[in-house]
Image (spheres, rainbow, N blue to C red):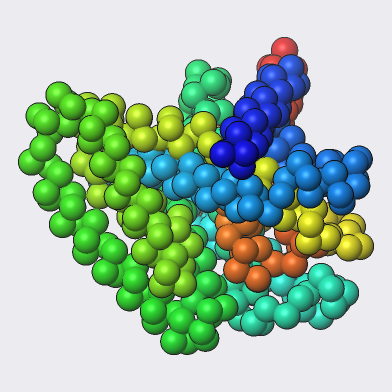
Length: 405
């Protein structure tokens, strides 16, 4: 009973930290998720350094921390079900030559910059930064970390600036959604290699294949219940939430991250007004608990110890992250026939990493692929690149206005 009370008090405090982060972000005219992520992740290290290990252990005992980890991961799974369901790769987008070329540029060049970063990690970085992860798994992990784009945060930015972004917003969103699938598949390969070499990769792809078949069958079955879903959205939301959590646990048991379970369930749910409301309830419930996921990540870093922060690695990650995404998005857009201004805006927009990047990094850290130093370096890269999106778009617009006078 005492642990339950302790847990409830902690949850209330964590929700307060997340709200404070959103408030600060709004004051700075940044995406609210940036403030939420930054304060939530910093909470653990700040508590440890401010009050010492004994107070930290009293405030965040191991048994309560374990419960927080489960709550945070469950919240993330439920939230991602809604995000995946919102992704619409429609036939027009898939057939568009321009979108295809933007996608290639925004994915391939960042993959190459990830290989450059991996070369530094393997050959020049200190041993404590390199860690003991399998070489190919680590290389794949770093390539994925450089190549992802945060669709949830990008969608929020585009929604707030839809009129001024125009075509660049639509094209960058479609390209970012198309990037998701190969990025997650490469992450599955990295996790498979880390878990058991080539046999782990085969198990990972077999799990995804079986999950894909089940998702397709579920899609066909759920399509027959549109009327009931419209009448009883809360009941269907509870059922879908339990299915998502069960899928996440099942996929996790096969050596992958529970996030793949959320991905499959999100694909399984049909489109339509009835299901939009059901998925909205699931997504909003998960969104409430996502900050707990970030707090647990910060506590893991605090207790695990970062050691000497690889400052050169931080700078290199930020530079390569910007060059890969902005450069790749720009070159792909120009290749697709877009003008320079639209191409530059697309490059800046696909450089948004945010929530998706943090999830990928936490998966890699939990799997033992990323050391604390690498995690922090790439975390800084994710926050910096996402924070730059709005101000750089404003700068581009101001320069265009000045040039037009």
